[in-house]
Image 1 (cartoon, helix red, strand yellow):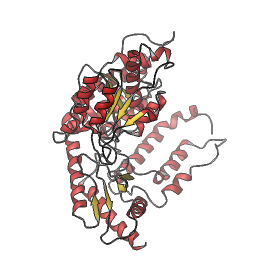
Image 2: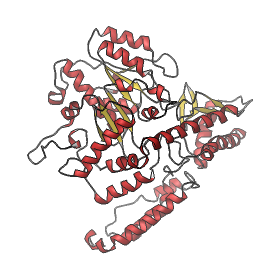
Image 3: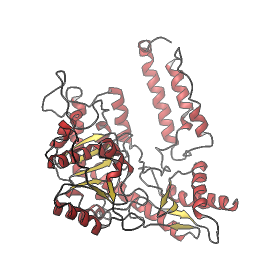
Image 4: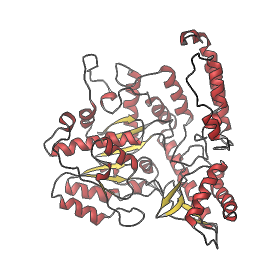
Length: 473
């Protein structure tokens, strides 16, 4: 096969064919199994050595299309794993367009449209979440890099309190940073701390019970013991097993009293601020120093997308700026100077498009619908004699387990097997976890396509598969 230049005349036909195949896949999602018995085998069929001579592009894409069963149908309405959303029609179309125009949203010089759409998207997101308009922000690849970005500004603030500019001189000679959180702190936050050179094990997890509830007296005592020395507190809006929240308003009071930096990890819980019934859970986030969330969760834009907001925008430039003779130095939006990536996909196309298409009212309606679906599932679990609800469904995650009456064996082992069997069954998919020391399920309702019938299937499949597994033990 010749080099890609020879394919230019075939490009339009190839793209039209690909669009038709993609549309066929999207049409199949309402009924498509999340996975099948051959999913893993199909995925592994793409292993092999690099070809010496290429094949025609249409054959390559046709081969890829035949392998789509090797991907989980995570864009569909019955994928309840990892708090993953789908891609709204407007977001998906804009993301396709972003790939076609192939922008590097590093600077105004590299993409004026990418820069303006990101600037507008940040302003609109702050408005959507009712956060102060004076804040700044940047789009990232997801919650991990959003945490990295926001906590980098916290690191700069903390080091400056010790008389050091860490972005210029590093951390040498500084004491360990005091970092406090509840038992809800997410691994993406501790991973970010590790990448920042602060240490993932530096977080003091102050939990008052086996749910991970923040021990407020312990936090107050820890901050008081520092006697005014700077510290960082990570509050959590939406814990991954049951959707629980730290008492953010009360934490903000303590941080203000003791001069600590408050960072809020709101990967999906930040969206609680859109729905009046859930907004009290997220009260106080507007008083934080930094906040993050994921776009490919409840915003329902394609992977990969996250956002970091900080109340002192200049700290982003301090941490992430770069300079060279060939790089632009103008005052236009240059988001490559405000976050970790310099080569940046124009993810603002999808964010701007979905916010333009559905607005505040559309996202409020979606979040409220998902809250109602979570309550519906929790009520079905509560009413079933062989299911046990493990936590109130206060947001979009329902923590429960299979507990058939009269079963005298190991319930944790049973639920591990049931969870694996449900996912192998493929009609629905969700995560198995440990919650309060028990094996549990944690379906998360985040996809814009999900309906009552999809949610009802969760309880039905667990009971059906659970009975089959239990009878085999």
